[in-house]
Image 1 (cartoon, rainbow, N blue to C red):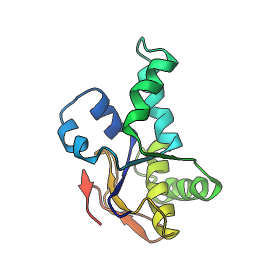
Image 2: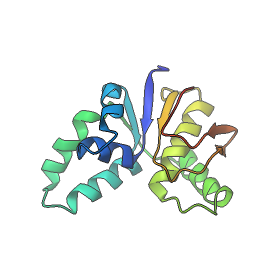
Image 3: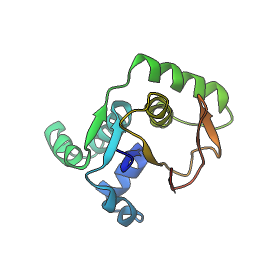
Image 4: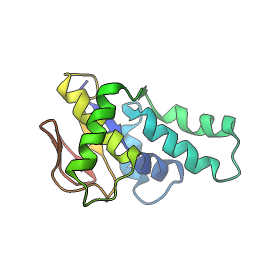
Length: 140
């Protein structure tokens, strides 16, 4: 399970749009875990184009191994993060991604592994004792 990767919305968009950096994400296919909030952010971005909902689902779902529902514990972790890192302008999806990593590791869950985040993630962001250094890919 330690080979699973939590991906944030911006990272999946890089892959879907074949933008620079997509080559770093491609080897992670088959091991990608995302918060349902992050998936919603990706879908909203794609639906801003001329895609239909069905096309959007067909574009996103093959890349994600597991979509983790945003639960009560993650909701409070994401809220706690907002207070801890108030100097950074992180969206709910960004905080949901970080909360998923913290929640998953705190529970000894299936999403232990690496966290891929965009450059907006604050350095040394911690939630419940789980730290996520601000880097493109961080090894655990």
